[in-house]
Image (cartoon, rainbow, N blue to C red; front, side, top):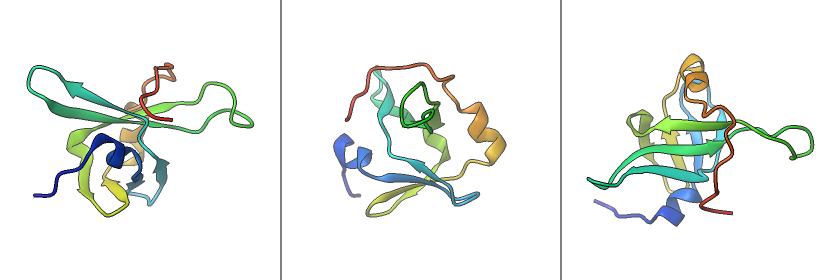
Length: 97
């Protein structure tokens, strides 16, 4: 089993297998502190206008991750489920820049 770091995960592009959409790069991760399990990946959505404004963020459940490539994370999210994974545009402190 190959081990990876959080910074390596953050440099992998997230691709949706259902429609081939490039969702972006993880900006944060949700962890369960008591048992150390990864719960979800947070991926920033499109921002408004010229990169300014509040864009959506998607919270992708870990159970939707299919596999890892050398530089990609493949997820399986039907378009209607992607909308329900939205964090509501809530701005959160970024873990990575």
